[in-house]
Amino acid sequence: MIVDDHPVLREGLAALLRQTGTDMSIVQAESAPVALRLLDQHPDMDIVVLDLMMPGMGGMAAITEFGRKRPDLPVIVLSSSEDPHEGRRALALGRLGYVPKSAGQHTLISAIELVMKGEIYIPPLVLGESIRLPGSRRAAGGDGWSALTARQINVLRRLSAGQANKIIAYELGLSEKTVKAHITAIFKALNVVNRTQAAAIGRQSGLV
Image 1 (cartoon, one colour):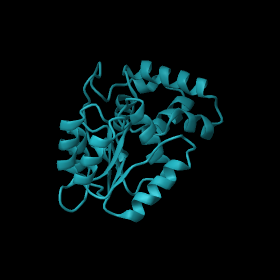
Image 2: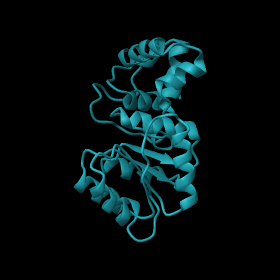
Image 3: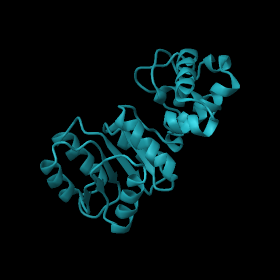
């Protein structure tokens, strides 16, 4: 479901998603109250892309209501704001992605794919802040990055930008299997368990 008060943006995003070739049904809502009603009508909803700045019930209030009605439903916040504090606030409310509207098309698609896999997409503007993520087996900023090869650093930069494995593979001329092997090596070197933690350490170490 795409929730935005601008019909042109909704249609543009819907068209972009259809270009991926994935078989999907797209529901549009012009406001948070409409989106909440549609949510009741579509119990099989897989993901919501939600505009943060809307008249009436704003995105932050909508996030809370979505969490109350469907705590298992992934929500990606799409915002015109470049304020990292708003990004952290949205993520702290349990949302799995925060994408500035200034981001490229590939970034948005990659963020959606990442969140659909149960991961979290954190944009560079938020990662640029000094953050600590739960679940890391050591504090971010350790020196495990020094064991990474040039190719692995390149892969780390791309996964930090939210790119999916298949996009990384395509752009680097690698197989997806090889990309997965590099990511496994990156996780081991940085002593982390997911892409979000790896990206945070990469950002804090100045690698991305």
